[in-house]
Length: 335
Ligand code: KG4
Ligand code: ZN
Image (cartoon, rainbow, N blue to C red; front, side, top):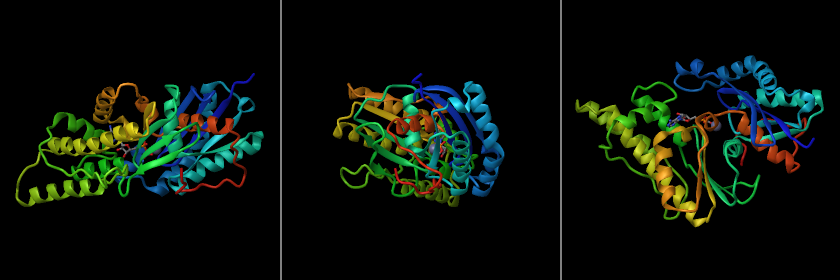
């Protein structure tokens, strides 16, 4: 029997997740215990609270993933775990659980980069065709990653300040919307009109880097100035204007890079990939570039999950990559 079963474990932020994936493409189980409610009243993820929740949840989440998959530990080919980047105290819970299980059952251990996981979520819904380009947009990351082959990642652009999701969350906060703000802005944006002139950070000619802090400041200043003057700004219009600026830059740079690097596929990844406006605009612009396939995973695979870690881990496992009992969490791991 040459089937490969990999247990994936993900605890880099505020989701305790475990999943079993068969042959790198077929999800047998995908359990996510979200802590969102516990962090909401603080307006963001509180690291200490995240770690404690992971400790409480990890055993149950792994047990549930194994039960639902109907796979025993003896049948597993490997255990894949997110090594970083993320919150160190949160990462450590997953890394130590994975090490304990790998040691107890004599299983190979594979360390996975969180962003590699987000990219490989796409392999759960489509064949990856190289060379490809992936736009990774989440609460912690905004990156354009070029891939020539499996397991080889080249970051061709990244944010110089705030991540796209971070900008969404900060602007949402200024509009008194609950955390995480991305989905709320997305919803409001669809009801509003693009009436407020906001900047777009294109940076140097030909650069695929991003910057969102100027846009965020422009939103905060506009709201502040309006308040001082006693003027009313419709939050819907602010949401629509902000979202238009973010999407314009993300989509334009992605399409330009796809052309320059002559890719066969563009993959969308990360929590912000849930954004309806971004999905629609990327679909529209990619349709004009006939020949390049666009893959957008379903929402449940865009936000943090462990199936994506198992999917990436399977590829690394097949390439012979192994971690050992010295594996440590790395909060600023490079792709
Ligand atoms: O990938 P993810 O679940 O966690 C990280 O690794 O960061 O991404 C979470 C981020 C949050 O900033 C959240 O506001 C954003 O994704 N997000 C959205 C939407 N849904 C989630 N941003 C814009 N529009 C959405 N619909
Ligand atoms: Zn993530």
